[in-house]
Length: 150
Image (tube, rainbow, N blue to C red; front, side):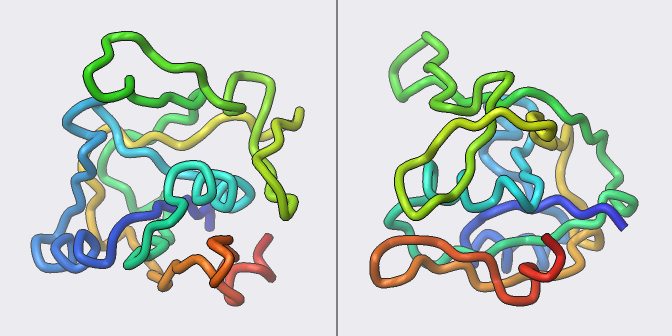
């Protein structure tokens, strides 16, 4: 089984379970939902979810998806009020983020693309959901159940 991962609020995950599908804001604004490979989750969490609470990590079985999944270079929406696309902050082609008890660090590697889902996430593709809270120092860690998978 191939899995991909998505960080969202516990409220959004609950609403998705009730409705049967999940629609991130990025689906409306960018045309797809951002996902990560397991090796990318912590870099994404530190870069985009620092200081946030009430998060969950969704584990999605790609074989169960009903919308089209593409692996592409990282894409970030423009800053609020800006029409200019920002720099990719270390997610540029040829780099990926790693988590080294410090600031994000671009590193060359073979898994440079991110999974993008071009449609809503059908909730029956979600095979697990884990609370995903930062520690007292604001650092994220993978759920213990996923560490053996990495």
